[in-house]
Image (cartoon, rainbow, N blue to C red; front, side, top):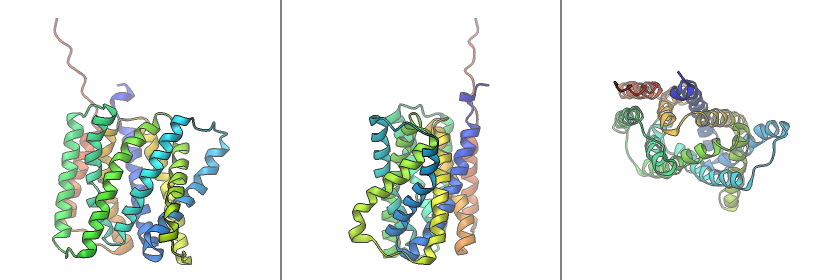
Length: 296
């Protein structure tokens, strides 16, 4: 079977990338609660650049062409505000609940890939996304039904909705980037451009960083690099509609890290929703069946 017919390895790498980024979310929530979402987001971007930039430069790379620069800048702008709104929502909502609500993004991205990239949406990919989204609804319904939906929660959900819309478009840009640039270059410019873009808000939102936020920020920066490299590598080797369902595994990671970091309980709706998500991911990794050979 040719590699193009089976996306198992890219799928596993993308799954690991989601895990890295989910753990990063936990560290970023801790940092954002200490020094504010804006300051934490800017520092994470520059820490990530400082970690990955020298590795990319050590390979003696050619500078990006003008067309590639446009993609780097486009994704940097989109991801900067995507990250800022998301990390702000983490200061208002529980980690697992925020991750679950953000799952609207992969669903949007699945169909954006069809409109903007011309990718064919397979029945398995559609089924996987439907199952993943159904699992998300089960989890969200269980969690929101147990708590009050106050003004802070409403603001958090609004920020997540903005972030999810940007995240959906971000998937499409990743796919384009992965065809013209390597993972190290993508990770370097992703962090660097995003940090520079956010500096325009520094006069209004910057808060002096506290010393206790340094360790979670360093961890978040390293995990951002690891996640970005993993996802860029995967998207260079498989179509977006195959890899998008891996994003639903983020809730599984968030439930684990939410319990470890913040002692968030894992409920029965969480387990039921996770079962649907895992089923959807399994469907997405199944190889496409070869077309039947017509009889003579």
